[in-house]
Image (cartoon, rainbow, N blue to C red; front, side, top):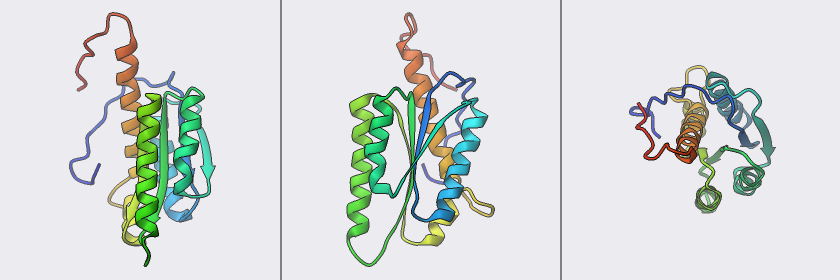
Length: 168
């Protein structure tokens, strides 16, 4: 999701959803903003006791997300920051994280909220971190996407609920 045009997600009640957040630790200021935005969104949607797990870096997000998904989470939100440097390392990490998180979601059927910032500069990351003065709140957006998708999947699994009614 990107800045202007991000969908407005309406979720009436997510109190019974089990949501896990896995967050990297690199780039502490940006990560603190992403995590705060995620926690705000979880509170807004009524998720009372989310599981929050910290891992060293973004490359570790897929394996932790996979474990949380297989342990019964209804949705997992992955938060991280990768900032381009002077070597191809950025490309390898971004590709690995994106493919890994996609695989976890497809293999487990558990929605994965993608809150991994892949930025050219730290200023770009700060502008997306949901901090005071930021233009975007990607932590909040990642939770919104994961929880909304979990709600759709839950509705689809209920007997007599097919086809799933459209979301507003």
